[in-house]
Length: 120
Image: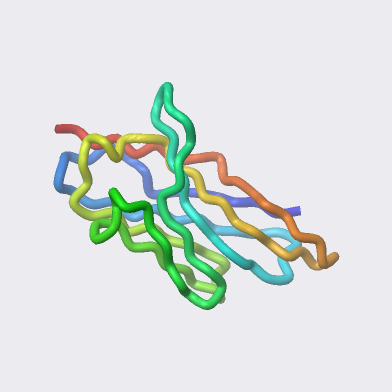
C-alpha cells in the first residue's frame, strides 16, 4: 500500500523555526493533494495547510504568513516550513496524502505524527 514517514518535529523556543517533512512510498501511481493537520492534547485534529498536485496552497488563517507548505513531486515528499512559532502551535503534526495507487485505487493515508513543542 502506501507508507508515510514524517520527520522534523522537536522542541523550539517561541519565535523559532522548524521544518517538517513527509515522505510517501509504496504502490504510488500519483499523489494528488497533500496536507498537514495538527492535534493538541484534549483537542480535535485541525487543518493546517494543504497543497494540490499543481502547487496551489491553502492555509489555516492562524498560520498564514508564518508557515509555508511545499512539495517535491520527484521525491514524493511534502514539507512544512514553520517560522515565528508560537506556544499555541504546540501539537502533534500529521501528514495526510491522497494517493492514486498503481492499481488505480484512491487511498487517503495518514502519517504517524511528529511532535512540535514551542516553549514560551
